[in-house]
Amino acid sequence: MACAVLASCGSTTGGMSSSAINPVNWITPYKVDVIQGNFISKEQVELLRPGLSRDQVKALLGTPLLASLFHADRWDYVFTLKRQGVEPQAFKYTVFFKDDQLVRFEGDAMPTEAEFIASLDSKRKLGKVPVLEATEEQLKAAEKSSASKPVVTDPTAASAPADPQTTVYPPLESPKQ
Image (cartoon, rainbow, N blue to C red; front, side, top):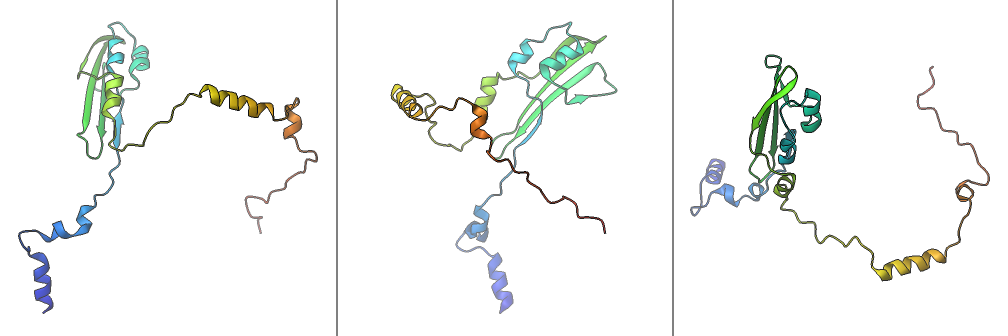
């Protein structure tokens, strides 16, 4: 009898698999966003020009993700972004040096900072953003409420206690026995 029940659990009923019916299969686990490397924007690439020193390139683009001992005159900047429900993004840019001077650079067409930020837009909406400017009425109300409060001329007088007491805390370590 038990074998018949177990066998029926693995079979399909009515053309629908049992895994589609099982509510556990409806839930997908959360996957963490994986960000690796340095994002390089189109604006940063436009600042590159032959003749820059290694330090100047590092100041513009950041520390390279790959700097090989076998290819000391080449820096590779790789950026990858993997997010749940979104196609992975990958960008690669390479700069070449000769005698510690930038000779040439090549790589993928980089998006502008604004384009990249727009591509990060998540599906989660947080609601309406509040207005961050006060109206004239709010400013006048704030002036009236601050005018009714007493003014303290000595800022240390209000914060310093009248009778300072020394607080003794227990030792962090237990005494040696």
